[in-house]
Image (cartoon, rainbow, N blue to C red; front, side):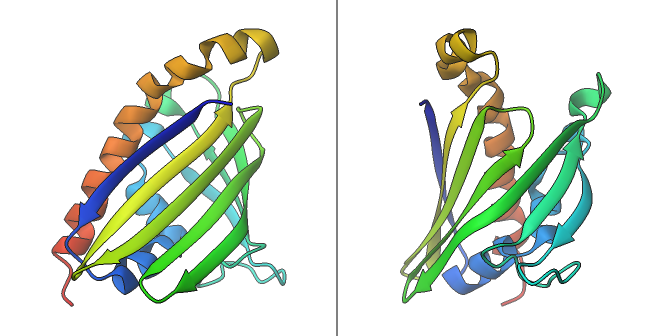
Length: 163
């Protein structure tokens, strides 16, 4: 299965970066406008609507319409893991319904002398079975602008945030 990875160093404490990424509002803030993201529903693991923190078991129903072209693409993801200890944290979301055959996104955060190393790792499989498998490695062409934006926006929002 193809893997896409990208990382960025953010001049902010790991606690702030972790908290920002632990909310649905963080997802909205980090999605470029050209994706036309709509968060349709967010449900916590206990069924609570609009939870403050995306804990393990939380589900996010969203849709996108890249560049305003074509029909909206539905996307449901579930937080399947969430861990935090001294100096490091991670959460993993899995697409349970959407445009990919498989999508597992691991978000990792590492404290490093007052800064935070943010690492995104996406394991994915494109639709169309065999053809999707052949074209899978080329998906980086689409992922790179999206994650470049996410990382630039993370730095912009958190490095200038009052501590």
